[in-house]
Image (cartoon, rainbow, N blue to C red; front, side):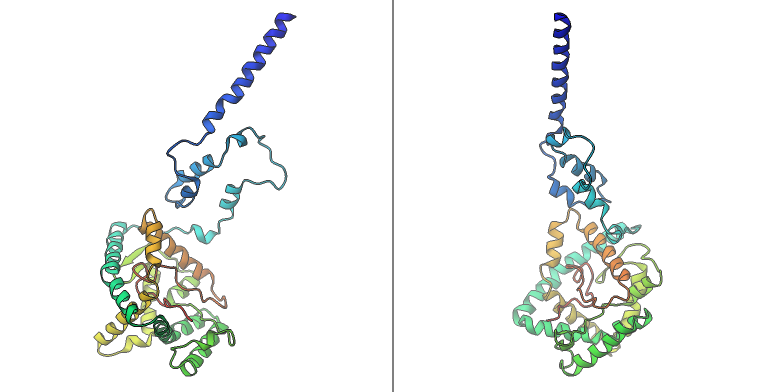
Length: 320
């Protein structure tokens, strides 16, 4: 019996030692990215980052806990992934990637070498309130685009809102230099609609990704939409053609002067700026299409997509 007791004691000691041995494997491995950094990866571009983040969120203490969880107890990381909205997981084909990357680089250098220096000099001469008023003026001129697309989407309340906004801002707002219609007293919020969104509301998909020189990210659907926007924009009818080019160039400089730093922040924080801009663009456009008929859509374009990423995108200037 003494030998039997001694044998059982030795077996128990060995089992305890084995239970503690694997703990060393669950310790963080030096050199691996921090969990916060891994979480910033695009999961569709870096699928291994998801497993790495899960591994790093597993502590040694958690390895000893039982597998079963009490009711209401959920894993934080899995909970966050399951609740990611569908719009945030939109993907798009990119068969022209070599061309698109070349155009992205062209637009990027155009911004840093030409547009940004000119915009900085312009902002040094003209104070911000004046530049905001200029932005409001161009936004007011784009009212026909928003009005027509509200009608095409059967958003009649939005169309009436745009009509009254145009009337008030063109008169009380001194030709649109100010935005009294959007103030707290009146509260007529700008409807950010365009022909690309209208096509999307009728079920036309984005197709594949395109980056145009000067204009920035797009898709076949949004490229066709830009043609509709062109013919609905009163400035497009200025004659001769170089007057229109000059006015559009001035609008781009004014809009850029109000957004300096936004694109730089996105680029500095991105592992691959091209992929970051592409994903942000398609998700944003999908979100705008899904908001069809929503009253009060006045949020501006994503930061940075009003400059080299979105060309001289509409409604780039803030309304104050």
